[in-house]
Length: 336
Length: 258
Image 1: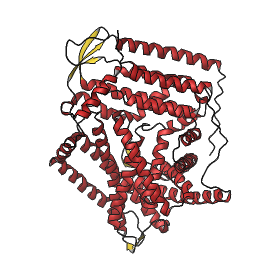
Image 2: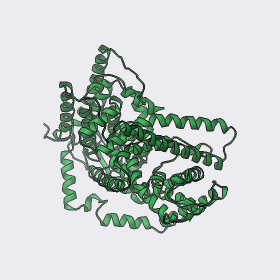
Image 3: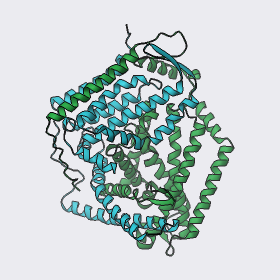
Image 4: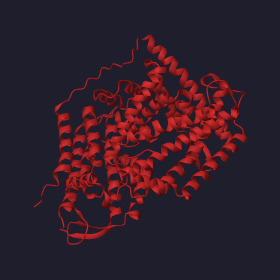
């Protein structure tokens, strides 16, 4: 669910860049209390671990397979503050090495998947598992990790429609987009929950010391656990469906309109209307006009033709330049 | 895998590769910011912006087929968000294109505008990352005063990425060798948990060894490299040219026309 630049308005994009920066700063300050600065390499290596773990696919049904996101698993293993910093680094590398997710949308992506996901998921996990003292039953660990991962994924997906509604770039109504987005991510979150628990079940068996809490007995992932998780999941989906049926999203929509988030153009506040007018004034090539009798502009066609001609010219020029240069692309291997 | 390929391209050499990473990062960010700020319904206004990423990709020798494939890979989400605009935003708008004029739904314009911005900003990002090596990009980010610890974390992530990806591929191959005829849900899940858990433990131990080795060599939390940035005339020309171009497009075009 990587956000893209173009569904965001500049104000939302910059706002969430700021929010993420503040959030990561707070996470770094909190992590520093338990985590020495010199252990930063460990966080980088853990980021690479999550990247690699995301490549392990898990066949769900014939033809479809799920994979781990990793945010909540990291939060359970290393604490939510470290998880937030690691996830932020992963999202930055996904953007700057693999060009996944927009540059300006990076703030939103870090906020959703780096901060909301791990903290919400870890909160649920801790609420169910309780304090670190005493032995926990394997069932409790299972319930806590499954619900934590599920809630983490669903919570970070729930922020996406809010950001899109605030940006007012997409015309899909919030009341439609929100349940679809969260519904799809409940499915994805269920897979995330299963994998998260499967990893913890393995770790409890071979290296119980890496977990903060002690677990009674040796837990193997049983058929009963899988069936149980499907039941929990079905309950959650049923809950969501009943929320949709009871019209809560309408309530959310009402709230967002009341607060002036999603403003229809007619009823915009003076400041918003001014900003809109300013933006319209600044628009280059004003080639659209509502209503008849508006003057026709030749500019837009000229602009398009001129741009295409320039592209062709640039292409020829680049070909000539590259032909003149000795093409010694040196594919030296990565310095691992 | 397309991921390996994009990194491979950054290892090449061209006029675009030789530009100063700071100038390239600045142009990519400012270009994206300007494109995103173009009003919601101004679809045609986006066309001239294409010159910047197009020239960058062309001079960088990045195959356009590669850019197109990358756009397809990352497009499902954006298509989902944009494709319903014409259904929901049905206000009619009179569009003049040269001597022709026709009515369309406003949603068609906003949909085209979202798709156009998507193509432009993703192309600019692909242009940046496929003509700039990651460690140079990190150094440029450090020059722009991004937090030092975050940059160290990124550099370690990148350095170990290829190593761990190879390791996970070996683990997956081993599973496939053992999984002939097996495909039940419980088994698939248990083996996935095993692979990831195993990878976690190996990574944890590896990170401890790496840290011990680095501490023994006097690592104090900062990485020193020999790379020195120097802005040459070409870098200034690229920076000034690209920035003036987008500023002129954004703010100049609404001047009264004859």
